[in-house]
Length: 468
Image (tube, rainbow, N blue to C red; front, side, top):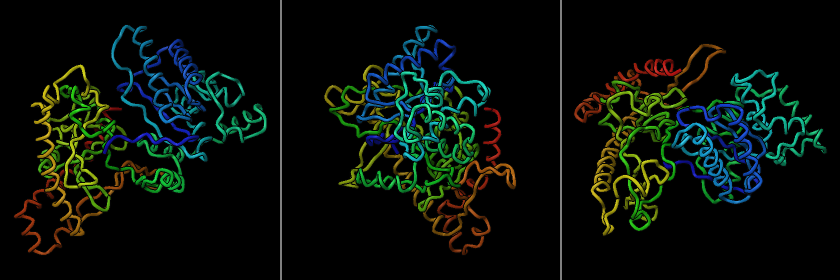
């Protein structure tokens, strides 16, 4: 799946997060914060994007914005990134990118605008950056809660409905800080911005789906509820497009130097012939969807624990799914039999200035591209074999739901849920003819590797502890 498409709906706010690369600090001192605020002020005046709430944190920033043109927020964030990086690199004598890839965004239903403003502005206090009795200088709180104009904030319509005057609105809004947010609502906002899904109710999803005439393919959201924290995530793709020999004739690709593009993956899709290799280091499980697929668990709900701070895989074998990047296979919707070669235009591996050409001067496939296509085709063959094995197992009825938790009783916390494993009792209860067939087809060996891999759930906790 490609990175999340930037949906645009006029007069609909968006929650934006931009982080420093590798979680490193991007605001080092007061002057840095001040310059960042100056850039926000300049952009909010010159671009058709209104900022309703913001906070600058040491290694990232949150914004709540509304745009009135399709690409206004993209231009806004691009402008901020370019201007601030130029300032920062010049000041600290460095070069290169400062940001952890593309900014994250989530459309926000109006009913969540005010609590999300509070969520953004209270970030320094929730994270322990400062005491809650000290006003934080680098957020929109002083504007929204004390009617102090900062030149950046434009009130959202939900904010203006609080009262008839600026002073009264500020007083009402400030009272939110005394009420606070429930942990469920905080997690609700976090999950939607991390997954870049729409922050809203099921009715809001349906309303937006009708506007664009598409099924947004979402799970129930509604009010914050217990939901699956385990989802197959292919968020490593930023801008997946069909490879075109004319449009991309000058495109080049560099060797893969690191795996930072996959740091947000909570799980990694696997092929059946990889299970024995991966099971030595990570849990191998089945997704909990109606049509299960095979994945390696590499997270406890946060970042990818299989990738270290340098972007390197911590074990020797790297799954084929990751090695296929920045390419992927797709199907022509009008002709499902036709395979399409896709490429991530947003990848740092792709450019027009460095690397190996994808096409020759005669617009023919280069050796690099031919090798990539062969890899994808072989991957697809193995994927279909894997799909058949997983389907056979799923249809036998031996899969059961599992979750990873910490604590007990009221203190119990679900880290990962929504995945399945094989129930050994149900497996042993299958008919001898079925088991004999599975032995011949190698499915039993596959199951044994899966079962033994579950011991590595403890490995994930050890990795998470080491990382912290």
